[in-house]
Image 1 (cartoon, rainbow, N blue to C red):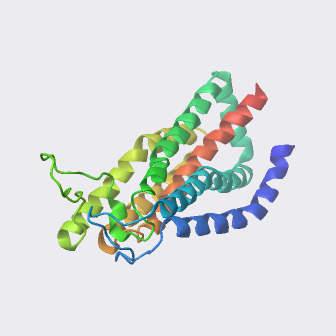
Image 2: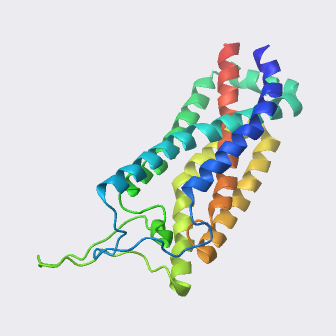
Length: 259
């Protein structure tokens, strides 16, 4: 009965959750389409920040981490409930019953645990990044790593080494940065697609198409527009990925109730 009533409530909550997620994304991807720096660089070649500014940045990044772990999942669970109810509930129940009969429900829980782990591992470093790069650091924020020259000790330390961010080389670097971002969650997406597709094949296909479109947008906009321009592609691919994960959560929870 609870699941039967859930879609109506989900439909009412979904727009509100989407507005919250959009505001959250706007906070994370500041200076969209504007790769220019609005903070000064120090002698190290990195943005100058005092300790108070670093702590404020870390606090905001930590809040974004929690929000990105929770809000997209709430929104996508609402969508999953609507898909379950309107897309052929009797057929979905029969498929879940088959999975339960094979005693594979624990495997579905294992997939969503792994999926959440991948999200955490890719998002938690942003709290460390906040101590190095100010939110207004423009294309500097595209750097996954910061290098230094291995030289004998000298009185004046050499600046750190970062990616070239201007001209064709900058576009090339950011295109590859997008590829590495894809690699971070690729295994998780494939797992979610395969397992969700066992019960929800057509929704899984739609999610895969949206994911592919989002990743192409992400790479092209990141390369041509700089850091922040990739936000739209990121949101499309992230939500389609999370939607598949929530379908798996739905199968796991419903199968557990049947058990």
